[in-house]
Length: 192
Image (cartoon, rainbow, N blue to C red; front, side, top):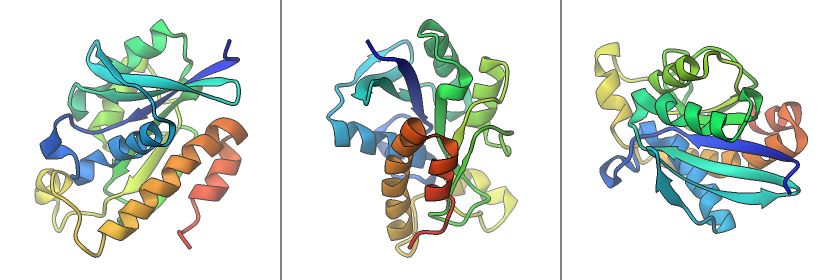
């Protein structure tokens, strides 16, 4: 029996046409964990998910299929059903305010205007869950925000983002096993 249960949520939009967009880096980090551990996934109640054991813990990997702005509709019922408290729900998302490939992990906080995080905060009834954000860079102008998040990365950005996804995949497990401080020390510094 696992001593504790964790939920790692990747934020993104479902569908192959969104897979490599800026908005889907959260999905890609959680996909990297699926591949690393060979997790078998199933679809139910507006989400794709599976779990794996990690040193006495059960870790659920979770992809809401509700589209970004409604992510909380899938996350909150799943967490409640499995009695996973907010501090053990790690949400991985993109962030317009960070340069492409920069990583920031915080134990809690606001949404920063991210609609997927807004939805989770609203449905969980609070913002006391950790979040791991990966920079996707600012759009050229605020009016281009929607187009920017649904576009792919430039050839210059792609290697930085690929490295950030790999570092984040490992950082998620550092967070679960060693706590937020160790994970923040690992992730919040710039890549070598």
